[in-house]
Image (tube, rainbow, N blue to C red; front, side):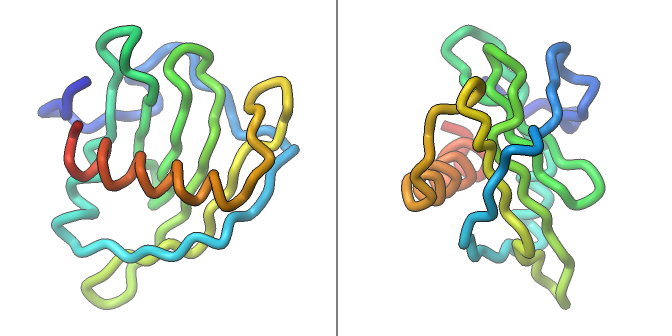
Length: 123
């Protein structure tokens, strides 16, 4: 997985599915500096079967898709406030045929991990 010179877009990956109607809102609070926003805005394009996420930013919404299925698992809306970008909404997929988790606390932890370790650190 790499952070490309060109930012990831919806068109960067073939099998992109929308977040289903079966969804839940997570209690997820996070703000990003302008530098962090620029970094997360580059997204993630999977390069091998080991890369589990395809992530892109579109109109201040971060979309988190599973690379194998294209299913949208998380959708996080950001809002610019002064020099920060604040999470104003975090949605999670609750369609059991697409994503088996039903534990909001676990999903907050996983979303935090994906943002911190994959988007911001690039691990």
